[in-house]
Image (tube, rainbow, N blue to C red; front, side):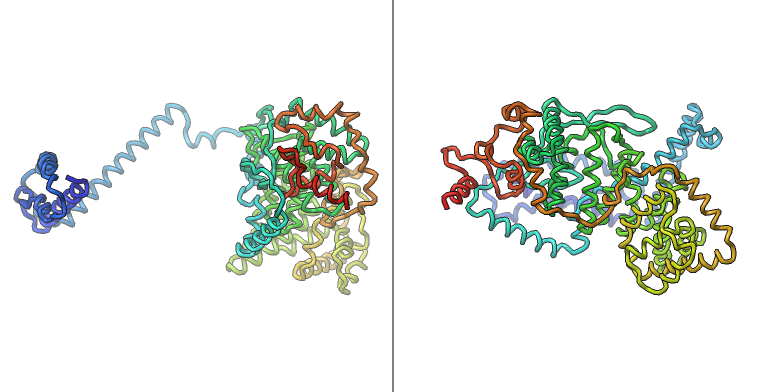
Length: 629
């Protein structure tokens, strides 16, 4: 018997049993349950298309089905012969009620057992509230709150995803297709590179033309303290050799020597950072961004298995020299994302940068409010100001004193749309007035930087309280310069200008009636910021600017000397050839300018591999043809 016929017979038998049981429940019949006299094998008589050789299979399968029927019949006759004559709906309700009672009884039994276990272990729920909280527990809870607010959402780290949300997937697809078409035209007649299957990364998306990353850079676990895991990058002997060559080239300002390092070790971090700065000065922003992306990819490939920085519980202290490059790379990557308009991605990178070292060596705290406002993450910014380091002194910084007022302004707008207002918190006008009283010199610098040319601002600056743009405190003046350079674009919105001017007029009216407040706020500034030295002098104002400064190529020729790094850092290029994972130096590259080769190596349609038959590659052929001409 075929499997199809067997399945059909079993399904038919199952439907007949269900039909009989439903009729018995409706009629309330008290007679014993009997099986139907219909022989399901009669259906086989209608299958004339089956061959005659299936008779033997029918005989054997008949015995199997008879035993199957006997089992089901015995199981159906197990209940008593008498069936209750009550309403079937009531019967179902009773069954459901008894089932619920059984479940409730099981729950109460489980709860009792759990209570007994808790009593045995002396772990009562209220015991934690009765016991005093130690200082260590307080510090631990404070750090847990700080880390929770700095958790990074990996889906927002991808700039391409944010661009799709901004411009739409159709625009991005057309843009990508146009780029692919242009690159395919440039690749005609040129032998392409070998494409590697690169590992996926969180920080950046590796390009197809990148090389594999070797294991010369790694990370080690140092210790666990107060719920935080501390790590440090480690250099292998071959990587340390390249690092010494880099230091030798850097000492004599030999950009060409640094470029030659990248020919043999394409993921040398310090060399990539140096070349990224060099490309940025030349105005080659795509090349600079590509170098930073390669740098971040190599740094991520070296992560320890326990290193999970997206949760905010891992620390890479800046005091270790091997950890410093990741801070510079993340800071530059954050600025590149901001220039592309990917403010939410820049915010996530800024959170990651701030969470890696609690001392904040790069000054990420002075940019995070700007990216939060540009990404319209107003609720998160208020939460961050309340929970980060669990003190309320963060609003004393110029950037947060003004940004929190702007944040409250937009939250009030959203609350008006939702017909709900939070009266517990201060209004945006009160917060802006407080910011002006604390940092009055900001308004004059904003008027000059934005610029604001209405007569209203002239009248405001004529008042003695807003006349000066200096506070006399070096640290505070430096932070105000950073704030104005970083956030002045926000103040070009008319609504915020109206909020600022209204608060400034209110401050002037208040000072006319009560001049003692000026001295009070001056005391707050002196206590909050040191007046002896500039504590934030290591943070350059230009690092927080979106403007790009470029130098003509003619002025950079002095840095492109002959590769003298071989004399100071390495004896010969065979030492590069012995480095693991790098291979030999191509013969067509050895006598060329290293910086020119590095420029071309970042183009996906260029290759430097020599032909096996001894013929020159495409680049060499082009050069030879130009020389003959």
